[in-house]
Length: 157
Image 1 (tube, helix red, strand yellow):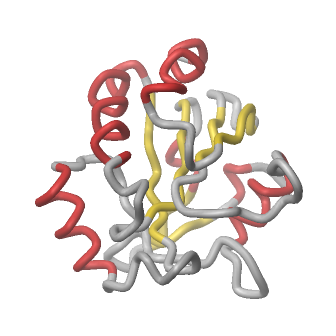
Image 2 (cartoon, one colour):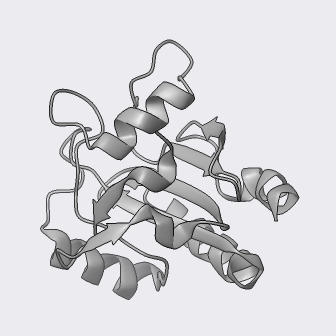
């Protein structure tokens, strides 16, 4: 099983096959609107604008598991992100990334690249970088800003 075998749900409730992103470099991020790392949305959007034409997709998966910092529904989260940070990259349905109800895509991502102490996601804005062949090549901590991973993203494009 690989990343393109998964189907996710966009923030309007439509099923999206990950096959739609085959051949692209992906940065998959679990986000929250009320987190200390929330300003990273600006850096993510800058990275997206800089590299989207070269094949980068940023996939945003809001998650409310860490300090209940993504309390809104999908429409409220979309509105917040577009109004405050002018984000244009794809946003998906709010999910769990850990535990019994963890989204299968995140179960897969965590199995491919474990964190510092375990496979679990520790906090909002953990980032997974996937190459054009669908390989999970890196996992970045919430403290790794979009600006700090620019070179790794660029190298895959």
